[in-house]
Each structure stands twice: as C-alpha cells, then as structure tokens.
Length: 216
Ligand SMILES: *[C@@H]1O[C@H](CO)[C@@H](O)[C@H](O)[C@H]1NC(C)=O
Ligand SMILES: *[C@@H]1O[C@H](CO)[C@@H](O)[C@H](O)[C@H]1NC(C)=O
Ligand SMILES: *[C@@H]1O[C@H](CO)[C@@H](O)[C@H](O)[C@H]1NC(C)=O
Ligand SMILES: *[C@@H]1O[C@H](CO)[C@@H](O)[C@H](O)[C@H]1NC(C)=O
Image (tube, rainbow, N blue to C red; front, top):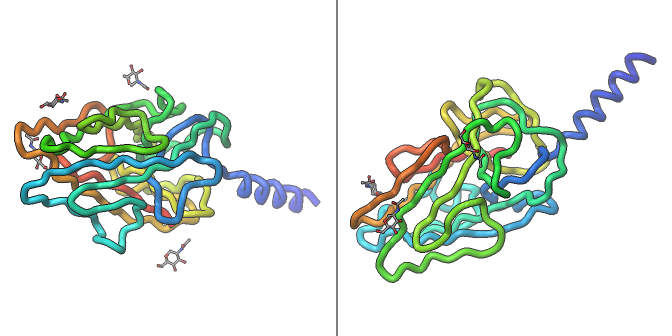
C-alpha cells in the first residue's frame, strides 16, 4: 500500500514537470512554441559585401524556425505570464531575458550586440521578443547560470522540442531528451564594426557565432 502511494507520488511529480515560473524567451524550433507562449521574430540585415553568414547544421538540417541566407530571421517563443512550475533548475545554460529581470537562480546577466548592415538597413521585427534593442542594430539580453555540472540531468518538459543557449560547458543535459548543438554565424557590418558583448551571455566563438542546444 505504502509502495503504491510512493509510486503514485513519483508519477504525479513526473507529470507535473512544466515550464518554470516567471517570464523569459527561448529560440523557436520548427516544431513550434509551448502552448500559450507568445511568438515573435527579429530580422537582422547582415553585411551586404562578401557575406559569410552560416548556420550549423546547414539548411534544412538545423531546427531553428527562421530564415538563414544573406540576412537572418530568428523566431522566438516567450513566456509572458509569471506563473509556472517552480524555479529553473541548477545547471550550466542561458535563456533570453524577458520582462526586465532574470528569473530566480540566474545570477549573471549580460548581452550580445550585433552591428548590423549600415547601407539601406532593412532590420525589422514582429511580435514579442526578448528584452533588447531592435533598431538599425540588435542587442539582446540574457540570463545565465553555472551552478551545477552540465552533465547532471535537469528536469524540463520533455514533451516537445525546445532550445536553450549553450553557456560555458557542453550543452546542459535534460532528462528524457536528446541534445544536439547548433550555431548561427552572422556576418556583421564590415565598416567600423563595433559588435560586442557584455557580462554573461551564451557561448560565442569568433565575434559572431552563437551556440545553441536543441532538445528533442
Ligand atoms: C544584472 O546583473 C547585475 C550585476 O549582478 C545586477 O545589478 C542587475 O540587477 C542585473 N539585472 C537584471 C535585469 O537582472
Ligand atoms: C535519442 O537518440 C537515440 C539514438 O539516436 C534514440 O535511440 C533515442 O530513442 C532518442 N531518445 C529520445 C528521448 O528521443
Ligand atoms: C566585425 O564582424 C566580423 C564578423 O562579421 C568579425 O569577424 C570581426 O571580428 C568584427 N570586428 C570587430 C572589430 O569586432
Ligand atoms: C556602434 O556604432 C553605431 C554607429 O556607427 C552606433 O549607432 C552604435 O550605438 C554603436 N554601438 C555601440 C555598442 O557602441
């Protein structure tokens, strides 16, 4: 009887894994956003001359919802409501900030700034996006943490694919999901390029390659 009760509790708690409390944004996979989240996209006008944009793995094998040619459209899923299922688990990963502050447990924040094309800049945006600056150039704010090994499994909803951002280690492991790394390289303005980053932000190599973790 007692064992049955414990089993029941275990099943109940496994089913209760939902998206954590507070608001935040994540890159949108082709499979879509979690139910009830808001959508949006950012279109960045990348360098016109000898453009060297790339996405890894290349079209159509990556899982980002967007467009990756000479310019870059990245779509986002944003949880705009406060209530959820507890706080984010300890680990080594970043999320995108939304609503002016980082969720509980993300002790380090920062940003990435992309110096987008200057000539006839055609940057645009639609819908709900992470906290940032979306004019002729692009700045996005992030919340990061490294309070546990990325190799320790964390619980997040394992029902449908999602992205997290890679931080200072390997991709964070998530129970019940396979993870693969994907990346996006944007060719920023060549002339007087002032692309930069500040504080804690997702893993960047070069000045412009951002690393993501895809869970399915
Ligand atoms: C970002 O981190 C700094 C330094 O720890 C802190 O003062 C600031 O309140 C944080 N900002 C947000 C939005 O969490
Ligand atoms: C993860 O990938 C392996 C091999 O590709 C596959 O056998 C397994 O079913 C996958 N697991 C999940 C949870 O998708
Ligand atoms: C300008 O951007 C390119 C990528 O588009 C990068 O490789 C280069 O290092 C950047 N220059 C500076 C000074 O940040
Ligand atoms: C980069 O330079 C442009 C103009 O060349 C300016 O508008 C922008 O504020 C600068 N960004 C930073 C982060 O210095």
